[in-house]
Image (tube, rainbow, N blue to C red; front, side, top):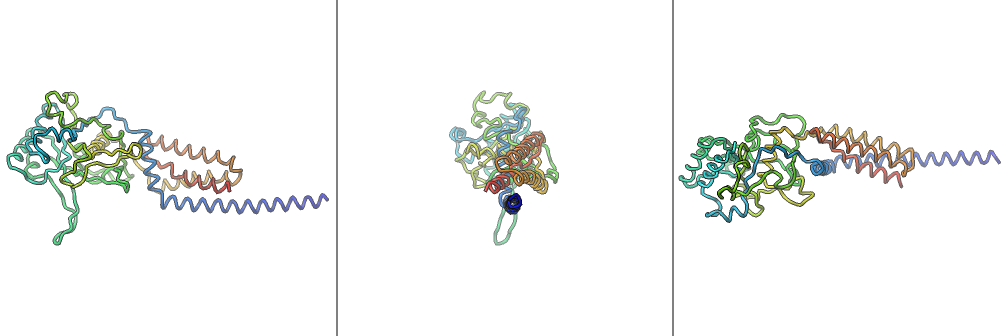
Length: 367
């Protein structure tokens, strides 16, 4: 009788071992498939979400901002005696008024590529020459005609550059969801010229923009206030970079044919867009403070996934799911903690990449 019981126990143990081996193989296979699919199909999506989440949790420090935005809003358009596009004498007056308030430099996120009435153009050019430290927007557009195909530069009028104005490219690189997360790597951008960086950013790790917050986080004043006596205090402008640009969703940029508004990392959370001029102000702030976020290369992210997933799946093979949940939770939490710590010192680590894989593995182990 004892022999028979012993044989039954041995057979039962062998059956459980075989079944557990098959379950382990199924778990490893499902985890491998989940890893491949996550990396190939969802890596960029998860990376964008992680970036937006970290921006929400830990935005850039807005202390000691040296940039002020004068926005062309609905109130400004209604207050001006003439409709848009304005005579260029207006821009000359803006320069003289801002110079009196002590602005260190002035950038127009507006293109002046076509001549208008000579009196207005000459007045604006004289103001540029008198005030100095002026940057005007330039751009690159694609042209496909019968005689020409390729990129074409839209530069400010030579009358204005001859007067001393510098040109800066206002083009930006957008992700598939329209959000501007990456720093432009080409030279003489609008923001880099205003920040005093004449050379392009060094190649190497990808640089991401560190935003301070959503729309109008950076000091923003209605341009209308500039034309009101004592509408703007000197301490608001003195010694600062002043940017003039669109601040309304309803006005179309006459040069680009588009509304100058972009989704930001905060749009996911508050549903609001950000004026293009504030994106440039954020870039200037990143240049001056060198507060870029450096993204780790893809191979390092993949290695971190493999380590996190491996250390999470092994407990699922050896222990019951209810007990094996603790170890993956610890590793994913540690990964998120490391991501937040690295963020504080200027590095972006996509810690959430491993989370869906570990979740799939846990569900598979629970079956």
